[in-house]
Length: 286
Image 1 (spheres, one colour):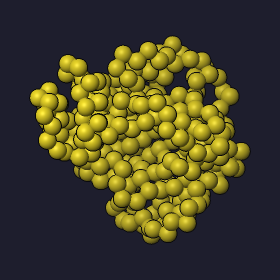
Image 2: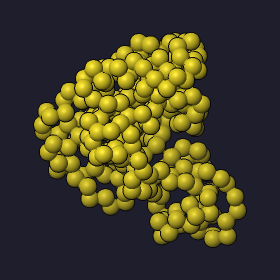
Image 3: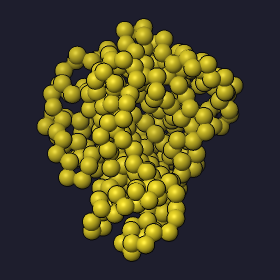
């Protein structure tokens, strides 16, 4: 088993573990941190901070330090997570509805759209053909695919690399190639079908390494370079004094960038499903 396969296997196991954690009155931070620990216990590292995106938040809602957000009955919770083994990564997501069945059909729409996409995701398939299949399947269920969120190629230490895989027919004629690692992630909504930037997520990645005067900031930057390289990381993971001040300083200097939460523009509810594949071979996160 190579490192891509190991990362995919760990990612899949952590997803199913996490799915069972999503319950009424549970803290989102507890869910995220238990999944992150599970990934480590299974022999990987988190490829990025676990997202627990609720209702109209589509993505990038990783809990903040001391976050008190609780899961409520009726919430539609997207878990997006990944494991890294030596920088080779799996990326997967699922949606859990808490205590109700109002959005059962929307969850099914993204899961079925993902199945259709996986059938098509072979060498020489155009990415617009996959997007077209995703869009049609989601619309078949009476929902809208989110146009400005997409799947993506993955390379070592880079979670978003190379080509993107759209969730609608964008006429992109680029083709999948044998052995390419790609995450496919349909999103469905009862809203407009576009997301906009929301609140800060406290999830960062290294953008531009350059000298910085502040001694403590240099220590934090060195730690980030050593432990995460270009992979996203959470402020929760950095156990340094005054970490929020230091991260703001590094962000202001353009050394790191922060990912905002992504919110459905008309506050529609959102569902997501995602797998990572090795094109022409297998679904790594099945």
